[in-house]
Image 1 (cartoon, rainbow, N blue to C red):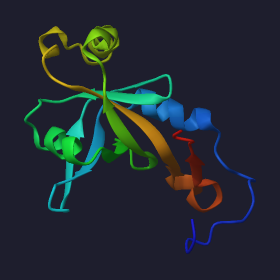
Image 2 (image 1 turned 90 degrees about the horizontal axis):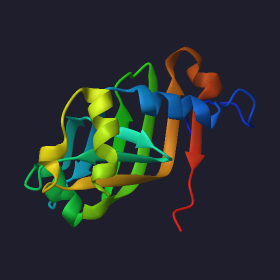
Image 3 (image 1 turned 30 degrees about the vertical axis):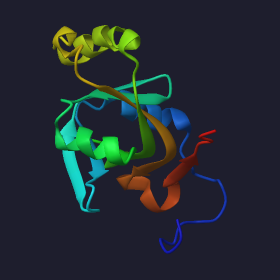
Length: 150
């Protein structure tokens, strides 16, 4: 992270489990997408971190869904800024036949019945770059993880 005065080397870096715990525990998430004209759009969403990917649903006509249809790149952030996890990635649509697989975990986490969302898109964000930024140890443990997207 050039320009931030972070130490060189790997000493003090966070383990991946630190990021995954926060990705799983966060109740609300931020999503940033890009409008077709290049302007940013940010919104709060609910979602699930399962097996190394982030899942969320949205109305097909929502601004974020329309943005993602034009540009599948997005940024997801957890709700606690003092232990922030920021995920850069690319979305794909969960196939219709797989949607029901997230309904039970979603209902357990949010106490919300997702069965009415069968006609709406469910997005899967595969991470390409993730940042872990614990405020209390920031200059000693800010961590970046890179993922092979191939």
